[in-house]
Image 1 (cartoon, each protein chain N blue to C red):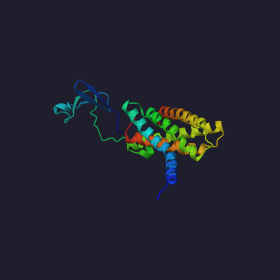
Image 2: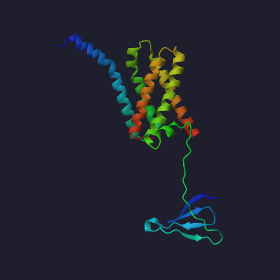
Image 3: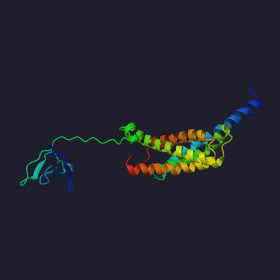
Image 4: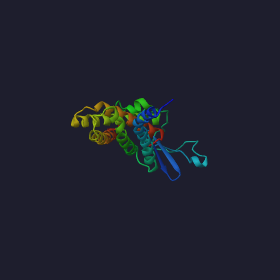
Length: 95
Length: 131
Protein backbone atom coordinates (compact mmCIF):
# COMPACT_ATOMS: atom_id res chain seq x y z
CA UNK A 1 0.00 0.00 0.00
CA UNK A 2 1.25 3.47 -0.85
CA UNK A 3 1.66 5.61 2.23
CA UNK A 4 1.50 9.39 2.54
CA UNK A 5 5.27 9.68 2.42
CA UNK A 6 5.47 7.73 -0.87
CA UNK A 7 2.69 9.89 -2.32
CA UNK A 8 4.59 13.00 -1.24
CA UNK A 9 7.74 11.66 -2.94
CA UNK A 10 5.82 10.96 -6.16
CA UNK A 11 4.34 14.45 -6.03
CA UNK A 12 7.78 15.95 -5.49
CA UNK A 13 9.16 13.99 -8.45
CA UNK A 14 6.25 15.00 -10.67
CA UNK A 15 6.79 18.67 -9.80
CA UNK A 16 10.12 18.53 -11.58
CA UNK A 17 8.41 17.59 -14.82
CA UNK A 18 5.67 20.20 -14.64
CA UNK A 19 7.97 22.79 -16.19
CA UNK A 20 8.58 20.43 -19.14
CA UNK A 21 4.84 20.07 -19.70
CA UNK A 22 4.41 23.85 -19.41
CA UNK A 23 7.23 24.36 -21.95
CA UNK A 24 5.53 22.01 -24.41
CA UNK A 25 2.22 23.84 -23.95
CA UNK A 26 3.96 27.18 -24.51
CA UNK A 27 5.49 25.85 -27.75
CA UNK A 28 2.12 24.74 -29.09
CA UNK A 29 0.25 27.85 -27.91
CA UNK A 30 2.98 30.18 -29.25
CA UNK A 31 2.87 28.48 -32.63
CA UNK A 32 -0.93 28.66 -32.77
CA UNK A 33 -0.89 32.34 -31.76
CA UNK A 34 1.66 33.06 -34.50
CA UNK A 35 -0.48 31.22 -37.02
CA UNK A 36 -3.66 32.96 -35.83
CA UNK A 37 -2.12 36.40 -36.30
CA UNK A 38 -0.49 35.42 -39.60
CA UNK A 39 3.07 36.00 -38.36
CA UNK A 40 6.06 34.79 -40.35
CA UNK A 41 7.81 31.53 -39.50
CA UNK A 42 10.89 33.06 -37.79
CA UNK A 43 8.70 35.41 -35.74
CA UNK A 44 6.49 32.52 -34.68
CA UNK A 45 9.45 30.31 -33.81
CA UNK A 46 10.95 33.11 -31.72
CA UNK A 47 7.59 33.76 -30.03
CA UNK A 48 7.21 30.08 -29.15
CA UNK A 49 10.73 28.90 -28.35
CA UNK A 50 12.11 31.74 -26.21
CA UNK A 51 9.35 31.55 -23.54
CA UNK A 52 9.49 27.73 -23.70
CA UNK A 53 13.25 27.86 -23.15
CA UNK A 54 12.73 30.10 -20.12
CA UNK A 55 9.90 27.90 -18.83
CA UNK A 56 12.11 24.82 -18.82
CA UNK A 57 14.59 26.51 -16.46
CA UNK A 58 13.19 24.96 -13.21
CA UNK A 59 13.60 21.47 -14.70
CA UNK A 60 17.24 22.17 -15.61
CA UNK A 61 17.85 23.82 -12.25
CA UNK A 62 16.80 20.58 -10.50
CA UNK A 63 19.45 18.64 -12.41
CA UNK A 64 22.17 21.27 -12.15
CA UNK A 65 21.66 23.63 -9.17
CA UNK A 66 24.67 25.74 -10.22
CA UNK A 67 22.76 27.25 -13.17
CA UNK A 68 21.63 30.83 -12.66
CA UNK A 69 18.57 32.39 -14.24
CA UNK A 70 20.76 35.25 -15.49
CA UNK A 71 22.78 32.82 -17.58
CA UNK A 72 19.60 31.19 -18.89
CA UNK A 73 18.04 34.55 -19.80
CA UNK A 74 21.24 35.76 -21.46
CA UNK A 75 21.49 32.53 -23.47
CA UNK A 76 17.86 32.92 -24.61
CA UNK A 77 18.35 36.54 -25.70
CA UNK A 78 21.65 35.88 -27.52
CA UNK A 79 20.19 32.76 -29.19
CA UNK A 80 17.18 34.73 -30.43
CA UNK A 81 19.40 37.49 -31.83
CA UNK A 82 21.81 34.97 -33.37
CA UNK A 83 18.90 33.03 -34.89
CA UNK A 84 17.59 36.14 -36.59
CA UNK A 85 21.11 36.96 -37.78
CA UNK A 86 21.57 33.49 -39.28
CA UNK A 87 18.10 33.60 -40.84
CA UNK A 88 18.61 37.01 -42.45
CA UNK A 89 22.15 36.11 -43.56
CA UNK A 90 20.95 32.88 -45.14
CA UNK A 91 18.10 34.74 -46.81
CA UNK A 92 20.55 37.26 -48.26
CA UNK A 93 22.89 34.49 -49.49
CA UNK A 94 19.99 32.50 -50.95
CA UNK A 95 20.66 29.46 -48.80
CA UNK B 1 22.09 24.51 -81.87
CA UNK B 2 18.80 24.61 -79.98
CA UNK B 3 17.87 28.03 -78.72
CA UNK B 4 15.77 27.47 -75.61
CA UNK B 5 15.10 31.11 -74.73
CA UNK B 6 11.40 31.29 -74.09
CA UNK B 7 9.07 34.09 -73.14
CA UNK B 8 5.36 34.03 -72.48
CA UNK B 9 3.41 37.28 -72.42
CA UNK B 10 -0.24 38.08 -71.98
CA UNK B 11 -2.35 40.74 -73.63
CA UNK B 12 -6.04 40.85 -72.88
CA UNK B 13 -7.26 37.27 -73.06
CA UNK B 14 -4.49 36.12 -75.40
CA UNK B 15 -1.16 34.60 -74.54
CA UNK B 16 1.90 34.88 -76.75
CA UNK B 17 4.83 32.54 -76.84
CA UNK B 18 8.19 33.74 -78.10
CA UNK B 19 10.79 31.11 -78.66
CA UNK B 20 14.22 31.52 -80.22
CA UNK B 21 13.82 34.18 -82.88
CA UNK B 22 12.47 37.42 -81.44
CA UNK B 23 10.26 37.93 -84.52
CA UNK B 24 8.52 34.59 -84.34
CA UNK B 25 5.37 34.44 -82.26
CA UNK B 26 2.64 31.91 -81.77
CA UNK B 27 -0.81 32.66 -80.51
CA UNK B 28 -1.62 30.26 -77.69
CA UNK B 29 -5.34 31.06 -77.83
CA UNK B 30 -7.76 31.37 -74.99
CA UNK B 31 -7.83 28.20 -72.86
CA UNK B 32 -11.11 29.32 -71.25
CA UNK B 33 -12.85 29.32 -74.63
CA UNK B 34 -11.57 25.90 -75.52
CA UNK B 35 -8.65 27.30 -77.49
CA UNK B 36 -4.98 26.81 -77.03
CA UNK B 37 -4.84 23.50 -78.83
CA UNK B 38 -3.61 24.64 -82.21
CA UNK B 39 -0.56 26.86 -82.13
CA UNK B 40 -0.67 29.25 -85.07
CA UNK B 41 2.29 31.38 -86.12
CA UNK B 42 0.86 34.89 -86.46
CA UNK B 43 4.00 36.81 -87.34
CA UNK B 44 6.74 35.02 -89.16
CA UNK B 45 7.21 36.83 -92.46
CA UNK B 46 10.59 38.28 -91.58
CA UNK B 47 11.95 35.36 -89.70
CA UNK B 48 12.69 31.69 -89.85
CA UNK B 49 9.96 29.52 -88.40
CA UNK B 50 11.33 28.33 -85.11
CA UNK B 51 10.08 25.09 -83.65
CA UNK B 52 9.63 24.54 -79.98
CA UNK B 53 11.40 21.42 -78.88
CA UNK B 54 11.21 19.71 -75.55
CA UNK B 55 13.42 21.41 -73.01
CA UNK B 56 14.13 20.36 -69.44
CA UNK B 57 15.29 22.57 -66.63
CA UNK B 58 17.05 21.29 -63.54
CA UNK B 59 17.35 23.54 -60.47
CA UNK B 60 20.90 24.24 -59.42
CA UNK B 61 21.43 22.94 -55.89
CA UNK B 62 23.29 25.22 -53.56
CA UNK B 63 25.84 23.09 -51.65
CA UNK B 64 25.09 25.05 -48.46
CA UNK B 65 21.31 24.77 -48.76
CA UNK B 66 20.78 21.84 -46.42
CA UNK B 67 17.00 22.22 -46.67
CA UNK B 68 17.16 21.62 -50.44
CA UNK B 69 19.62 18.76 -50.21
CA UNK B 70 18.02 16.87 -47.33
CA UNK B 71 14.37 17.88 -47.67
CA UNK B 72 14.24 17.23 -51.40
CA UNK B 73 10.80 17.79 -52.86
CA UNK B 74 8.97 17.74 -49.52
CA UNK B 75 8.38 21.40 -48.54
CA UNK B 76 7.58 20.58 -44.92
CA UNK B 77 10.81 18.61 -44.52
CA UNK B 78 12.79 21.36 -46.28
CA UNK B 79 11.30 23.96 -43.94
CA UNK B 80 12.02 21.79 -40.90
CA UNK B 81 15.66 21.16 -41.89
CA UNK B 82 16.30 24.85 -42.64
CA UNK B 83 14.63 25.91 -39.38
CA UNK B 84 16.37 23.30 -37.22
CA UNK B 85 19.89 24.05 -38.44
CA UNK B 86 19.23 27.76 -37.93
CA UNK B 87 17.92 27.09 -34.41
CA UNK B 88 20.83 24.77 -33.64
CA UNK B 89 23.38 27.34 -34.76
CA UNK B 90 21.64 30.09 -32.82
CA UNK B 91 21.52 28.01 -29.63
CA UNK B 92 25.18 27.10 -30.05
CA UNK B 93 26.13 30.77 -30.31
CA UNK B 94 23.76 31.83 -27.53
CA UNK B 95 24.80 29.18 -25.02
CA UNK B 96 28.46 29.56 -25.91
CA UNK B 97 28.54 33.33 -25.50
CA UNK B 98 26.38 33.30 -22.36
CA UNK B 99 28.53 30.53 -20.91
CA UNK B 100 31.73 32.44 -21.58
CA UNK B 101 30.26 35.55 -19.97
CA UNK B 102 28.97 33.80 -16.85
CA UNK B 103 31.62 31.13 -16.30
CA UNK B 104 30.69 28.29 -18.64
CA UNK B 105 29.53 25.63 -16.16
CA UNK B 106 26.10 25.09 -17.69
CA UNK B 107 26.80 25.16 -21.42
CA UNK B 108 25.95 21.44 -22.01
CA UNK B 109 22.57 21.74 -20.26
CA UNK B 110 21.84 24.89 -22.21
CA UNK B 111 22.77 23.24 -25.52
CA UNK B 112 20.68 20.12 -24.89
CA UNK B 113 17.58 22.03 -23.81
CA UNK B 114 17.98 24.72 -26.46
CA UNK B 115 18.44 22.31 -29.37
CA UNK B 116 15.56 20.15 -28.13
CA UNK B 117 13.19 23.11 -27.81
CA UNK B 118 14.36 24.60 -31.11
CA UNK B 119 13.73 21.33 -32.95
CA UNK B 120 10.39 20.85 -31.24
CA UNK B 121 9.35 24.37 -32.26
CA UNK B 122 10.48 23.80 -35.85
CA UNK B 123 8.65 20.46 -35.93
CA UNK B 124 5.41 21.98 -34.63
CA UNK B 125 5.73 24.85 -37.12
CA UNK B 126 6.29 22.35 -39.96
CA UNK B 127 3.26 20.32 -38.86
CA UNK B 128 1.10 23.46 -38.87
CA UNK B 129 2.71 24.42 -42.21
CA UNK B 130 3.86 27.96 -41.41
CA UNK B 131 6.11 30.15 -43.50
